[in-house]
Amino acid sequence: MQSPIQLTFEVGLIATMNAFIAAFATAYFMHHRQFRGKRLLETILLLPLILPPTVIGLYALMVFGNKGLGGILPITILFTKQANIIAAALAAFPLIYQTIRLGLKQLDAEWYEAGRVLGGTERQLFTYVTIPLLLPALTSGFVLGFARSIGEFGITMMIAGNIPGETMTLATAIYMATLNGDLTQALIWSGWLVGLAFLVLWLSERYGKRQY
Image 1 (cartoon, rainbow, N blue to C red):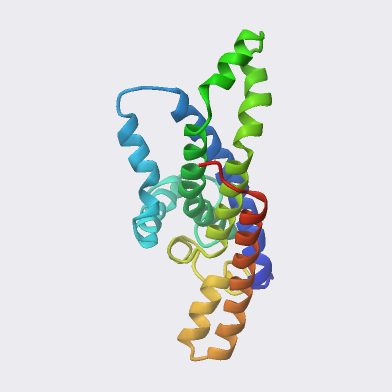
Image 2 (tube, rainbow, N blue to C red):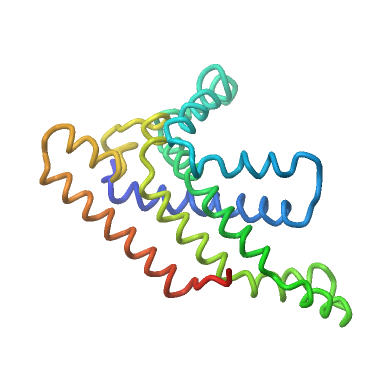
């Protein structure tokens, strides 16, 4: 049994790490490749930024339900902590992707040309040029993704539910407390969420100053 505070932090951290890896790999690939349908794919990747979370949750429910992967995989995903993580990762991914994507667009090609002239390999350019120059965007993307993941509600309710001690996060706990008329408890939970969000946003401004 975990409290909403513990579950929110754990889910947010795991989901953000997974979303960060996927978003970085996708943004790097999209930045360096040209192919038919690229603009369409980029639009799809960014759709969760503007679509209601319940729409994304509905699609996730279809994918991980009994008629989707849930009917194939040997484990149950819906209404478990794994569903919490998936929901938070889906919410964080487009924000992290967009942040890294914009950071990549600001990298000066002259740095790479100079590196190649000096005999640097592509791996060395990636390690000693791309990563250091992109670090502010990477930092901002991670902390903003984490902030988004800990506040996720719509997708979570669709695929993880609100089971006390198992899938109840701070966002869903606030909803239930308000629904039950317990305003005091709702304010306590919201205070924790505001505090966490404030902290990660402060860290973003303090250590992740953007270059774009």
